[in-house]
Every structure is written in structure tokens, then in C-alpha cells.
Length: 324
Image (cartoon, rainbow, N blue to C red):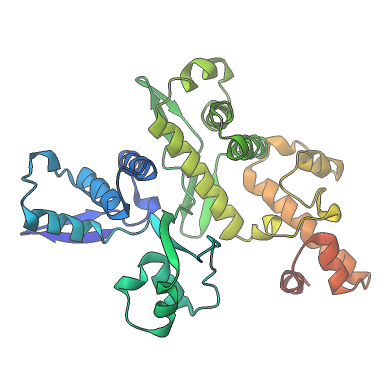
């Protein structure tokens, strides 16, 4: 939480995605949709959201009150958790910041070079083009229930307490959701977005799906989409399961060692594991991870060259060394 003082009063506002209650998350979705539609810039997006969660009625304010607007923008500028900066060269190619020191890299992700000290790394970045993109990687379902035309429908549970992450998602539900999500990313059609919502919120009530989902608002649909995408990004980049995804794909990894294919459940059940679709998501991921680790160790015990292990599994040399 971020603490702000206005006059004699102290207020606390969320400063991470996970701290957002349901309504404030939807307010942020509204502001982001306006930003994506080109109705405002990043600072305006932050200001709109801040005014909404703070209950500040900007419509009744005098637009010529410069001090008021300066205070609003100064306060809202502190909330940078939902945007980051992406840098590109003159040809539009994204430039990686990975070779820069971490503290420099972290600053450049959140602040444009013009707001940073006159140092060589920042001077280099200042020569690049930059734009704000969403920074959304978090392990929590911020919409535990959705409201469609006055009816509330409960969804999946996904939450982190300390270092422990828990979810109600089953392997079958997760695979169906990922399949719908990937299809939507590929063609951007309502059919596949509605399917994603169906899987996440109506998995056990298919009879009410068609009528309800068609009436969901754009803010709710985008909120569900962004939330699931953020959870996927968390699993793929912030957990020990990351090696399931972060591998080179080749003919040898297009089988049970890969998460993105349809026969993972069949492959695991063929190996003797039963009722995988009904298993909790993390049990499923544990089994996939175990298969990868067992395969690497078996190849190593058979004195297969580490380079060949890399080719067979799609893992990097460093990933393999950590396993063996």
C-alpha cells in the first residue's frame, strides 16, 4: 500500500495488482481501455484511475485551477505498477535492457530517460523510442465473481499467501482455458474469448453459459482476459515451473515434455498417472516438471553429451546443469 497525506488526513492506496479489490481493479480496467483506445496518455490513465479510487469528482472542478490539477497529477504519477516502458530502435525492433545493471534496468522500465539522471546508460536509452505497455504479472484472481446483468457468478480461486500459491483450477480446466486463450490471441474473436470466460466462470454450469456470457460487459471481459494472462505470465516466468515453457521447441519436445499440446494428459496417464484432468493444477505442473527432470537425469546417467541433452529436451545448458 502507498500512503498519501492530504491536509491533515492520511490515506492508503493500493500500489500492486494483488492489493486491488474487485471494484478498483475494474476502475483500472476502464482507464486502461481508454488508454488503449487512444483517449488518454499514460499519465492521464493513472490520473483517471487515481481520481476514481480516491473518490475525487473532477467534473465539478474548475479546469483553470492549476494547483488542483498539479496535485492530482503529482499524486497519480506515483502509481506506476501497471505500466512499464518498452524501448525500440528506429526500425521498431524491441531493444533488450538485460545487459544493463539491474538497478538501471529497473529504473528504465518505470521512468522515461528524460526523468532520470544524466548518466551514460540513461543517455543511451534516450536515443531509443519508447512507449508504455501493460506490466501485469501477478498470481491472483482479482475477479473472484463477475456481475452480468445483476447476476453474480463465482469464478476460480488463485491466490498467493507468502510464498504459497493456491488455486481451485484443475488440470483439465487450465488446459481448456489455455487452449481458448491461445485461440483468442491468434484470431481475436468473441467466440474464443467467450470460451475462456466459460471455462473460468461456468466450468460446472454449462447450461447457463451461452445466455450469460453474451451479456458480459467489455470491462468484465477484458478484466478476465488480462487477469488470466497475468497468471499465465507469473507461472511461465516467476515460478519453478518456468522451464516447462521456456525451452526451444523441436521434434523431441513436441510430446509429453511440452505443455502447449493437446496430449499432455494422455501422456501422463499413459505413464501411470490417473484422473489427471481432475487433478489440481499444481499437481499437474509438478508431474510435467518431474517428467522433464527425470528425462534429463536419465540421459545424463546414460552418458549422453550435455549438448545432445539440450537438443532432445529444448533446455538450455544452464538449465540442464541446474538439474544434474
